Image 1 (spheres, one colour):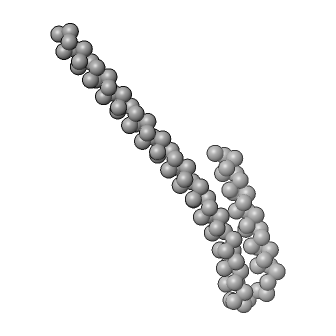
Image 2 (image 1 turned 30 degrees about the horizontal axis):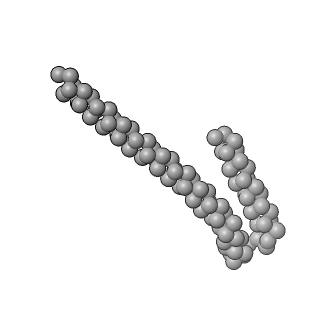
Image 3 (image 1 turned 60 degrees about the vertical axis):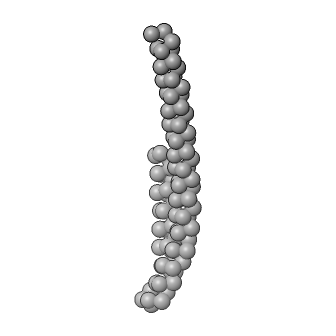
Length: 93
């Protein structure tokens, strides 16, 4: 996890550096240039965030399905073993 966390931090640092370069290169003091720069930053950042959350949700969904499958199989095996024990107890006792 530390590699992923470091990669994400590096990615945000690069975005911050690019943002600072864009803000330094534009004319300071006009509100419209500042707002357009912020809009451009949002256009760059939000697709990556939505892609990351999409990948994360798909992986969590797969984990949930495998957990449900294993729980169902365990309960079915318990039922089969319990029925066998009841039948053996009835036949022997």
